[in-house]
Image 1 (cartoon, one colour):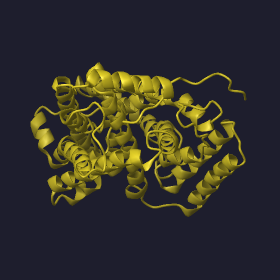
Image 2: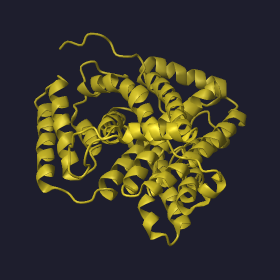
Image 3: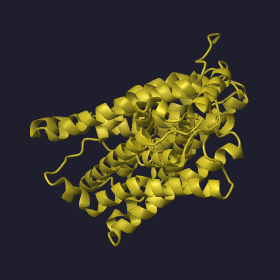
Image 4: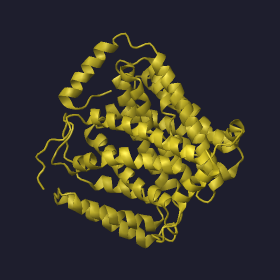
Length: 421
């Protein structure tokens, strides 16, 4: 198939715009879910029945009869993870993470931003051994939600902060995928895993043979997804695996390559993921029941641990890592940003939401009550982080050379389609 039409002139601009729009839709869909779950018992029953009604077919013995909720979390989210994998591969090989100099600060910040919240969570739950499986819930950052908050600030948020937030979130996604694959996988079927390996190998072989058409890769990705589903590893991991096998043509200094399968697939899927899949996931998973005594609900060990992990652990881990990196000469402060603005960014990284909700469902699969408690902590920690981060960035004095630096970076994007933070 010929692809003579040019792709968007700036992947960066398109990415930030789509993430901001996705964040707004995610907030609206999640707010609707919370409203339906709390406004009346009749609507709450209808909401839960819609999500958990048996559909009359079974894909695996582990999952049992499929429901809309299972299709969202195990099916649609596999496409979301495929897009995440494509973004990670592109950024790592051909984007803002393509050199160790560029990777250093996001990797250090993301690592600290995952480790410190997990430690905070474990400290808060103390001796409650049944809650330890949720240690990874506050380790994630929701890029769509966070970019959506940044979009509300307009030009008051330096472009370099948006770039740093994006790269931290991408590295954070890599860590979350690894956690899901390792920490939340139980018994594994060797036969299904072997079949998945053969499907993955076939995808790699197509790439080596120079195949540019997308449909063979997509058919094998579907087979890979089903084999991973049967294997016992969470099916969404198949999305990331498939992404690593999609060929890419490197285009240094340019935003996209029309003859690159990876670029074409990412441009094809990203709008569907951002504007449909992520909001549907938010609607299907954010419907937590708010109790009459909200403070007592949040003071329980699990929601408190999640909330403090996101709100306190994230800001301490990320801001501390950036501060140490700059002071030790490992990295420099983002261009045009002040320390107070970097602190505001660290607060926004406490918006866990999508990935945190996803990990929460994996952490307590047999306990709906604990899953609901985790949701309450995720919502509280994410909202606190969003409000605090917005206020800090809204009232933080701009860098003395803010206008000149922003104009220079805008010219770089117009020329090259990308810019270093």
